[in-house]
Length: 439
Image: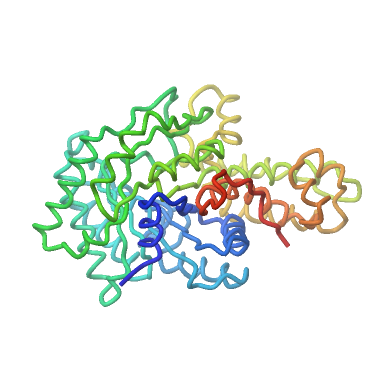
């Protein structure tokens, strides 16, 4: 059975300018913008949930895989995107949420989680057993990671039943930390080609010993470090020359491409260069909610300054209060004094505030902001002041001056750079794409 990911990987390996963006977010506004992008392009939409975000215990969103599936399907239906064009994926599926437990207990929960993803119809599964549990050494060897990945694959195959042929896997041992690095970064070492070869050979051998040849035949990507990452305030930019040998090394492995994590905040040209280098899957998450936050803070200022609009409690104040009341999602990540932590809570590239948008108090404040801005026309001069890209789209007749549309359009600007890089180029030049029109 063929799968759309098979076609994308095959085209990329032939040297065609093809890839796919992996949208790693659960926020409805991000998913709406992603659906609109797919509709505009006539492309597939790959949406992924992470193990900490969505799991059999609810994750930080409170959603199981089946809940997430239904939420994405509902948004796609409302936006007019056929479910046949939506691929669901699971990111970092492994023991990460339970690293504080002994390995066997953590792996048992991880197997249950992967099973719930597969049973719920998720087709692209990133098997990530690279992290150490409480009774593990600090760094796991390739064989241990491969054995645990095989266990996860077996659980997924069993849970998918007759639908197992639709499953496509991603493996790898050099897996970046979900959500960006926690320390200051100046540069990164690119994965060594010998390490790539050892990882893939070990996984292939272990899968064969475990009777999982069919599952191995559906592995379509491997996660490596191409030299891209972001921290709280800095971005490590991709250097194509540094990853040249890595890109050549994948030629020894038919049907495989690379999956690039932490590609957030790179310049548009980078995404083109990554796809050319056989990084056919480009994952983005925090950059999307960062763009959403930028737009929401801009609307906050607009509501405060617009005549005729009553907005007594700025959204940022509500968000800040919630983050202080429930600090567990940022406190271990943001260092410095009180002023530095306050700045990071709002403006860090790691965007830990993304954990708070779905909390009732913050979600209600967001809806209140949208409601306030809908009581009177938004002054275009203020949109020009705070959202100049959206002002230009309004002036071109592409965008209504409506609060939700403004936020979605701002998110869409980030998605547009990925979309341009992942589509075939027919004239030999990098496409100059603009954001999808939002109605």
